[in-house]
Image 1 (tube, one colour):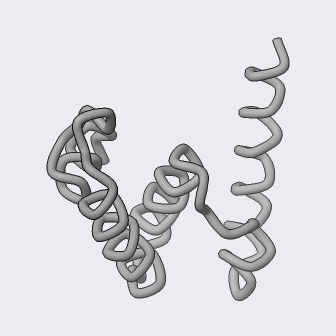
Image 2 (cartoon, helix red, strand yellow):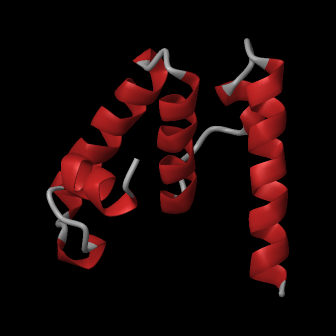
Length: 87
């Protein structure tokens, strides 16, 4: 999944600074619904990482409660992001 394409799909623009509050909230809502209903693990993880990048992803234990392998991948992702931000 292409990050800019996802932003454009959910928020109407790949430039979030150009998105007004109402459009952002609508896109956020649609993204959360798609995350809850997506059955493909890879696409689901991509949606979760987008939500994380935007600051509203549920924690891995909640997001992937029924899939321990995906939960571990999400935890590893968060650990890697934290290390990159720290350095």
